[in-house]
Length: 367
Image 1: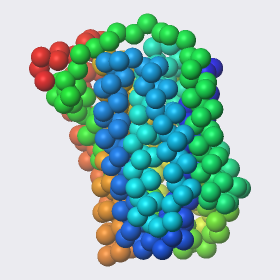
Image 2 (image 1 turned 135 degrees about the vertical axis):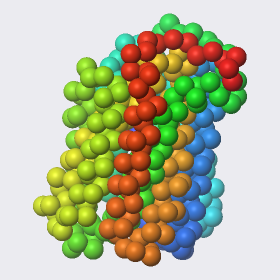
Image 3 (image 1 turned 90 degrees about the vertical axis):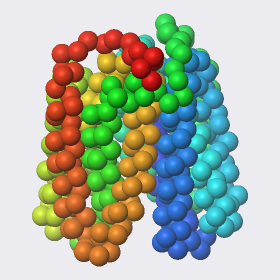
């Protein structure tokens, strides 16, 4: 249970530190544009770190990268306490994003190679971010929230020191592994399109919910419904084919994004959050399973998936803000639906030849 516990606690630390950053930045005098810069800076640092250290975990081993990322995340979280201006907060979030991107891919690869079921393992991450978000709201005081996040990471580091060694192959991987990108392009591109569409919505989603007459407690319940659904569904889907999981996740995502435009109150929006949790659970676990099963460079390939999701966290908010400002909230949701349909059309042709393919090592000489 140690890897699952680390997954649960680490995600609690990440999201308790994350959820109220826009509010904290506003208190430090940041404009809406500057708040966006802080989010982009964090996502960019996370992107770079996921890419670099996913590869390093395949080269140098999982455990030491897991331990390095967790202890550095603990120290990085503390830097948020001493920020006195929004630009200092942005620098702190760059450090936090870089440190928090070090360990996730290595932890996923370690769990897979330890015989854990990926769906069940990933579900503890969803549970962690849901509970972490709630705890952050209960704590309230920003300095205390960041301290809580830091302590959680140090606890994870202590637990990671006791992780047993598992059989693993040390690999030689080029810094820019073209062979891995080509091999998994259909998954990376479809996730990029779908998740960029999702992030177009998330940048305006709290404002959209408030515009429907909800209060902040209702918004919190909706986010928790999403996390709880992800946790439940991920427990059940390991037995299904990874390609079918990804395809199902993309299809449910398209339905979910369109259904947002039909909801007008809390009771009507609640089912969409449950459907959202199902769609993400299917897509995310399916993508992880596919990459783990089809690549011997497991940490590198999943690290690149995390980087793709970070890219979407940069692209999505930028275009989502522009579209909603020009055409309204519903236009953003229509655009996200169209992007997800394009993702489905991208995924199907590219994946057809790999459905029956067995796990084989990639050939680095192709890169």
